[in-house]
Length: 193
Image 1 (cartoon, rainbow, N blue to C red):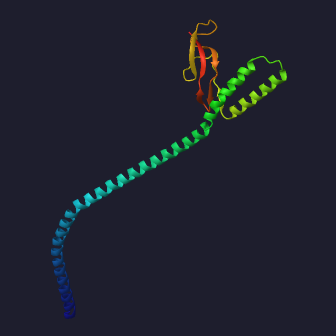
Image 2 (cartoon, one colour; image 1 turned 180 degrees about the vertical axis):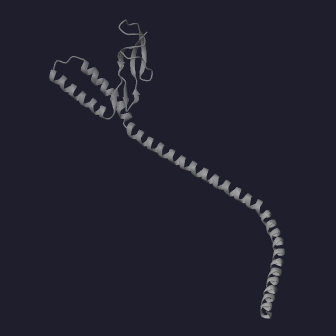
Image 3 (cartoon, helix red, strand yellow; image 1 turned 45 degrees about the horizontal axis):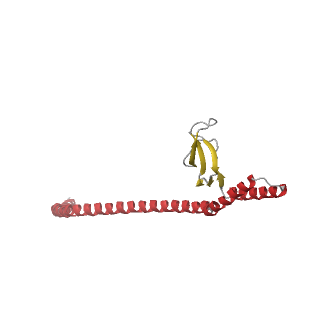
């Protein structure tokens, strides 16, 4: 039994030593905890400010990026539209000048000609010219008997005509044309009162 008692006493002594060590550690730990808490409390507002500044900077950069991306997409759309408009209306000046030639052809064809072969040839050339212009996107504005529309018609005279309702075009003095749906010359018309 003495051997057992020695072992128990040794064990008891070791346990007491461990308890003492733990006790000192426990007493040190609350103090350490307090100092650590004080440090973290001091760091928390600073860290919170840093985190807030960082999140504000991130948000500002993100907003700046989104705006830049939107601006770039708008630029691309605008550039594509301008490019399309350039192709669609590149011939506008030339076609506008050729309209005078077309008008002269029409006036010449309205006169009687003694040589039927000559008149036929002129009509064929006129059809060929108008065909080329139509392929380029030129269209005649329909005016006679239509409602007056200031976007397509230029009223130069008014008259009282029983054959037409009020506000209708009664006579076309000069044909109007659109090039790819854009008015390049409005029709010069006479409108009914």
